[in-house]
Length: 299
View 1 (cartoon, rainbow, N blue to C red):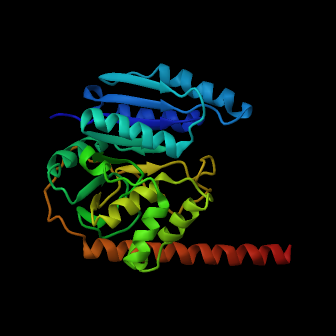
View 2: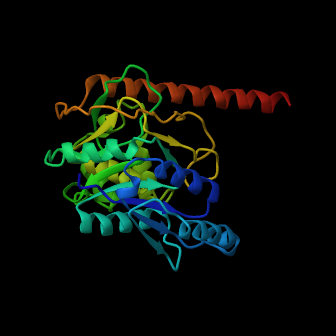
């Protein structure tokens, strides 16, 4: 098998980075895979020590076919670093597996990603493969949803070429086509607002632009029915993630499996169950806010 390179983006979280790398090393295919690690530079003097600790650890990593470390000399920020790193590596190899420093993978993550990349390589309506899936019961073994995603993913050069970095262009097309409701999973998740916030400088999300780029091209992402990735970054330590357990899931361990090719079309049950999940977390957030207000009032 012609294995995809892995690209890992790190910054200043040593413990998270260690857990992410250790999980990758337990993958059977790790020893035959090239690993690229992009280390961003500190935003300010207060981050310098933690950034240097991460860099020292990264230099000690083993267990891969080849390891290439890119240490930024200035702070690029997550979005610019990911866009540049993914573009550089995918242009060289034709495909790429992408992780950030808070994504703990199962021991069969690399096999699932590489098998899926090979299986759907010439299906030009498939934009990417995703390793994470929300904690939802009753999903198909694998299924497609329209758009793209960002927690342990893979793509090909022919798909990444459609990435549009200009959020205003994406929003203009979305509004022209009147596709906001569909993009927002029937108004259950505020993807359109996230894009508007990116345009207005309230966030610097590359992921919302990747999602909308694929969505507006009617391209699909393959998801597993059970997650191969656990996000350990929703503890308040990340740049863009507040403390939350809404998306918590245990990564799925399965040593032997057969990946079957499925019809390349959006899954009705996958979309419905994802929408139901989005509505449930919105309700949970509302109840949490109300409870917090009551506690504030009676304290």
